[in-house]
Image (cartoon, rainbow, N blue to C red; front, top):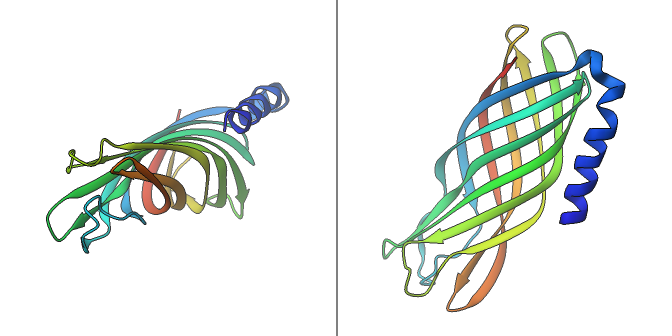
Length: 183
């Protein structure tokens, strides 16, 4: 994971001078639905396997086709029939490829690294788990004005749970809508 993060960061630093005329910082908020594919710590049947999530992001766009982005987001929560919950959050750094289709509409693809943290309400058997690895996503952005864009994005994260000392890896799909503001 450290090698992937170093490559993404080094690429961003090397590319910056070449695209200095098209640079721009941006920040945004996201809301959506997360669906972690994890088993509750008690092993009981699920009663709910998705959850409303929110997050924030900040990035730097080098030109019309390339940006680097840092994002914190909820990944989702599962609840078993006994009422125990397992919740996950992610912090990611991604390279973002942009494909403008018009002045107002563009497609985007994301590839990078993420660190996820899972916590459980059943602390007797689960003290939480962390997982770092590859993350990726696809989406579209509609630019309402020169400074404001609306996004629809699907992201995939790796998550983990720990039950009685045994770590289990899984994945989570996150679908968000968001607004980004370019400074």
